[in-house]
Length: 245
Ligand SMILES: [Zn+2]
Image (cartoon, rainbow, N blue to C red; front, side, top):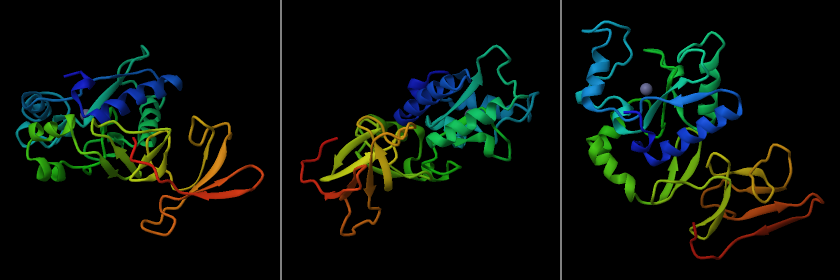
């Protein structure tokens, strides 16, 4: 399947963002394989084993060991006319780096086999062991997508906040449990010092005021925020608003 809209809502957003960011940096890519059926995964597994070709996966279809079967992985290919997998100029490493910065896990970092055109959500680890334990089958997992519980999610990069529909705030202030939080452009919660210029978190032009976010969970300043203006004056404030996100 080649439809990113069949994938996990968060992966959809990250994939679309990756394409946008790559385009902005002059790297033309297109999304290839997304969600994979058992039959499709079996056909890939046969390649290099019972069928000709190079081994491209270690995951047979029936045991759901590829994140493609869970809708949390996608592949991309090069779309600038130089060949879909032409890589003599380090193209795939550049795209891999952008994806990692977004918070995706990149197959180019793997060893057996190296899979440079592959990205996946890192939330359940590198293998499908954890996700299988939690949800048993991709069908059960997908039921949780449409109306999941809203809440905090932590991965290798940091904390992000999942709304009920699977989307998440990015480049935004939000009140959650009566506390203000600032989310950076990738949707991760900010701690310690960050800049905000009214529309962007940590803008590249260095504009905006500084804010300090105390990372101590349950500490006296949790949810409090220090705000520093250019003149060095400081204020500490908390909120008492209803939850709003
Ligand atoms: Zn893949």
